[in-house]
Every structure is written in C-alpha cells, then in structure tokens.
Length: 182
Length: 354
Image 1 (cartoon, rainbow over the protein chains, first blue to last red):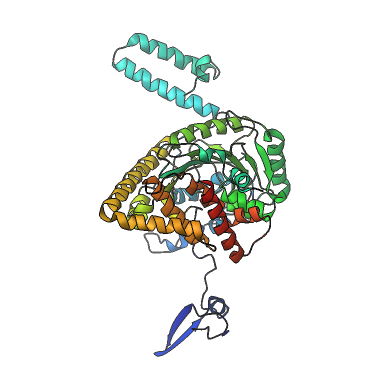
Image 2: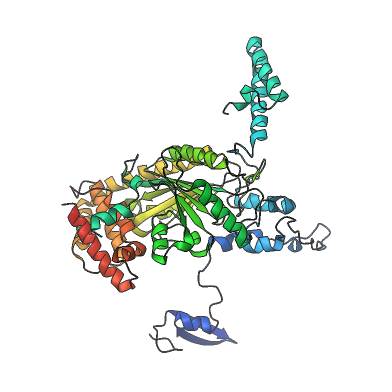
C-alpha cells in the first residue's frame, strides 16, 4: 500500500481516528506522518537518557503536605561554581561541574537512591592523592577495630603494637605505616 | 593494501590472545570515569578550557608508557576523517559520543590497543581497558594501576561520601562500568535469553547489543554490564557480574549440548548453510553476515567445522562493519556497494584459512 499523502513511499503506519463516534483510517509513510503531526516523539525514540531525566522529574509541587495544602515552590538552586541551575540539571540529566553535587545536595539523595538501588554512599576506590587524608582515616578505623578485637581476646602484646601504629598515624600523617598500601 | 595487512590493522593485538572461556566470552572491559576537581565538565566548559585539557594530555602523556601499555598515541578527534572516526568506534576504542560531538575530544591509545583514554567526552577522562575472554579481576587490577598513574598529574574530583564525581549521576561513586561481551547463540536460538534478561536486570546488571546502548544483539553478541556505581565496591560489583556471566556460560554450554543431542543434523545443516553463504555470496548485508558468522563460530566451537580459527568471529565482526569496509576501499561507499565489498572480503578471509 502506498502512502495516502505523498503517494511515493510505501505506507508503514496506519492510524485510526475516532471523533464523535465517527471512524476514519489513514495509512501513510513515516515522513508524512511526522509532517502531519501524527508522531510527536523525536526520531531516536525513548533513550536511556529520557528515562533518567524522567526519573529526576518529580516535582515538589505534586507532593502535598498532611494538611492537604500544596507545598510552596522551592526557589531554584544554582551552582555557585558553574552557574547551572537545578532545573537545568533535571532537564539534561548531567551535572555542570563537581561543585554541583554540593550545590544541589539537598535534592539529590532521592535521585541517587532511585538510580543506584537505594544507595547513597560511596564504597570503593579512593584516589591516592585527592583522597590521601581519607586513606589515613580508613587505616585508623581499621587499626582501631583490630585493637578492640585484640584487647577482647586479651592479646595485649599484639594490641600494644597496634596502639603504637595508631599513635604514629595520628601524630603525623607521614609515618612509615601511613605509606603502607591498604 | 593486501587483505592480510588490512586485517593486521583492523584487529587489535590483544583480541588474538587467548583468554579464559574465550569460546563464549569475547572480551572483558573496565571503564573508569574521572574528572578534574575544579574545572567545569565538558557539557558546560568553555572551548578554551577544553582545549587546555586536550593539550595537557597531549603534552604529558603522548608517547608515554605505563607497564605493558606502551607508547600511548595521542589522537585528536578533529584531525580524523569521518571514516577514521567510524573505524575507532567500531574497534571500541572511542565512543560514538566522542566521535560525533566532541570538537575538543581526543584519545590516548596504547600500542596494543588494550588501553584507551577518552578526553573531553561526557567526563573529562574516561579510561577503558580490555582483556580477551573472561578476565574482569585482572582488568580491574590493571585499570586501578593505570588510574593511579594518571592521578599523579591530575587532581581528581572526589568526595568522601559520593566517591568520584561524574557528570552523569548514573556514574557517580566508583565511576566504573564493567562489561563483558558474550556470544550466546544457543541461548538466543532456544529463546532462553529473553527470559533471562529480566532476571539479570533485577541484579543491577544490564544486557545490551554489541555497540552498547540501544543497539540490537547483532550476531547473538550480548554485552552485560553493571548499572549501579554507588554503594558497592568495584570488587563486589565485579564479583556479581562474574557470577552472572559464569551462569550464562554454563547455560549456553548446556543449551548447545542439548541442541546437538536433540537436533544435531538440523544444527549441522544450519551451520553449513551459513558457511556456504559466507563462502559463496556476492552481496551480503551486515545483519545476514552477523547471523552467518555467529552460526559458523558456533560450528567451530562445537567441532562441526574443522581447521578454521575461532578468532574468525571476532575478526569478521569488526571487518564487516561499514567503517572498516570503507577504510579498505579507501573511499565512502553506498549501502549497496558495502554489501558487495562485505561479501568479497568475507570470501577472501575464509580462503586464507585453507
């Protein structure tokens, strides 16, 4: 069947319209269907990106408080570093800079939870330089846990050694132990 | 250019190496997304800023080596012809996004093509590392070392609770996407894969076609990767992925054995028909080629076709992509011309095996 509009290309789409109980059917090609406004969505269809921006778009306005009144619209947040606003972020689904994470912090938790199966905290690699303080912090935490276990099991000699390590770490971040790989 | 030389150029050296379960798992990949701490992300940054980043990488890393990743070649996207860009995408060395949208985009590619670093993609830095077969742990270990090496000169955007800060909230945390490319013809033939995909996605993993997001599973090749990057360590993510991949391998082997037992002659018929098409056709489109290549590869794995290398699938899958065909022809080709050249190339390649 050829397209009823252009009579050139084959008709690949068939539409049925019911207006006031009156039924009309048209068949046309994709190009003409677009021109006629039968297809409103963009060519690429529904991408993962659309899905994600959809996820971000839950407006505070739609949520009502217990008294049944609508919440006032929250003023749009803006990142002081790159200038991106929160509504822009929701539209494109991408942050403008690393500082956006801080600027929009108050509204990001639900987004992270949705995208990452309920998780909001990083567990994993820490950069060597950018995270060197954090390395020490984590090392201290693990020593302290070790110390606690050793004391509980009354291994006092071992415990003393671990205690010294903790002291050294706390004193200056650059004692030999601090340089050890975790 | 002779066909042999062309194949040498088309196939990344690491692809020819052996890897665990290589009959089913074609490759393992780790991708790490990283950014500079105090610079706007590419989506917002000024052209000048991106240009600075680009030249920083050229100055600091071009022709540098790290461990087995030697002589990093610096490639500026804007200096490439459209065909050259397509070829890099088809080799998975750069992403379609970098090829299309990044005026200030660049890539550092190691000599063995196992590591590529994309610059000014969605994030400032994206490190990709490939291993043949199922070697996720090794790939992770190597990518961590490579990451540490880059970090010596770059201040990464990192936050104690949110991890690596990426442009897209779907990458925040580890910034890691681990993926495995699998050839699953028997699971596809028996329609089992369609029943497995929903179960796999419940585990926070995604199943896609060979060229990533939105692409269909051409030639029964499926890409399985993690979706979640926050709240789980890289090692845990990889362990989950690996266990699913191992199950898929088991199921695929069982399904193959089952097909042989139940309908061995039918399978042999299918394999040899496809082999015949590849050996003799004069016009072949990429869909038919992928299907036939997949059949023949399975025939090789199951010993139905002898004296032909199993690598042929990986090789022909890349060689028969539009970009490579045009590079081989050294000009732009229309779809019809491509189908003719594709058929010729496949015929010639199969002759080399004899």
